[in-house]
Image 1 (cartoon, helix red, strand yellow):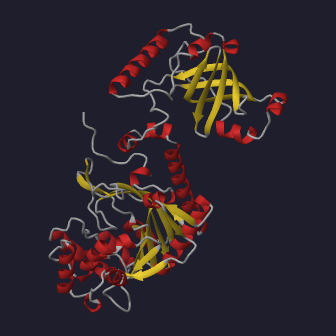
Image 2 (cartoon, helix red, strand yellow; image 1 turned 90 degrees about the vertical axis):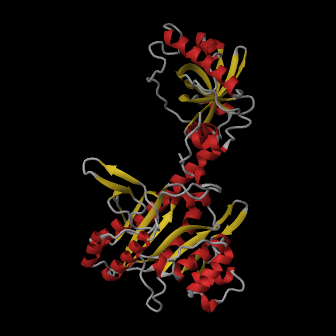
Image 3 (cartoon, helix red, strand yellow; image 1 turned 180 degrees about the horizontal axis):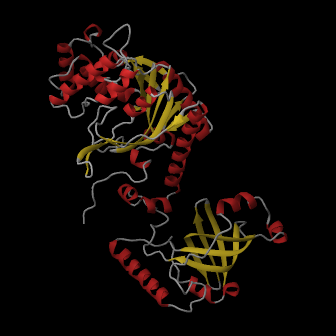
Length: 507
């Protein structure tokens, strides 16, 4: 790639390419360019670049000459060098790149046309494999087609698409020119495939539940609102699939999971996108400790599958997933990160308000001790949890769907899993007492009435489902985007979402 651009230069190049396309549209006799159509669709490949390198990469020049392999390849031209009567080009397909060697003697008039083609054009070529004097596996081309005329120049090969915002807005260009970006999304696919295979082997059933809901439930978050015209009702994009998946457990589907999108009307950051992917699963006859063990085993297996090692480097720091994952309570995390705090006063509302005030944390006047504890935890402890850590024993006040701890009803049998200072998973023993759940929903409604936009609605049908009886169950949610961030060494959630949400472009 040799084309560069400020806006003026780019506009000039685009105009030149449009003129070439216009000539192509009116041409009726240009050899090799498909005179009947400027965008022909009758070319078919029989070989891919990566497959050719795998099959012939260790074959010598002599072997290739003695055993001619005819191939038909196609892809986007990323490089061209014209040298009089002979030229070189490189094309890329979904598996990699292959070099083309073109000669005027073999191609005739189409060789002259090729000289006028541009980097970024999509071309098809046929010929025989050989090795150049520099020992590069190449195709000696004897047939050549222009399949698609590219109207916009690609970024300069030495700089790539370096502007972060442009990479996110024009992901299609990012994927063309940045191999690192392509590999991130290939790894994302492998992560999701591993989790599916892992759960399928454990007899879990993958299901799909509604994304548009009359009552948004399953998480403490602010929903997006839409309107269903035929029913004439407001609906909500789901913030979590939890309550529907637990309805399935009531119905006898004892091991279920879903990998799909959730939507939360919250801010944009390196860790948050309003549309994100979650794995959520439910295991009947299990508790939160079973799920902590599951997360630990799954992450080790995932590390081996993706990197072939349990030692992972993320943003310059080494993580050893072979070591036992740390486990501590919320209150232990608060004490460890707040020297001088009184451990005996961690459930005293007045005392906790003073601690929040000293930390500069604004709190709702209706917040109880559990909510205040979490404000302190979020401010002082979460970012310190770099190595794999399970934080458990969350306050019931902030865990409206979790089962209360038998020994201490202030707490629930809930955990969150942290890695590199961010939450990756949330799991708990499910609350299956319908009367307790109804009371907690009512408490959430009171919070909503007091101005808490993230508090839950009262879901009467879910209470009705629990009244039929849900077996002892454990549930888990895993943030796929953040998990992929870790395994691809990506600093921002936007690096692992193909088309992240952004502010509209300004003219």
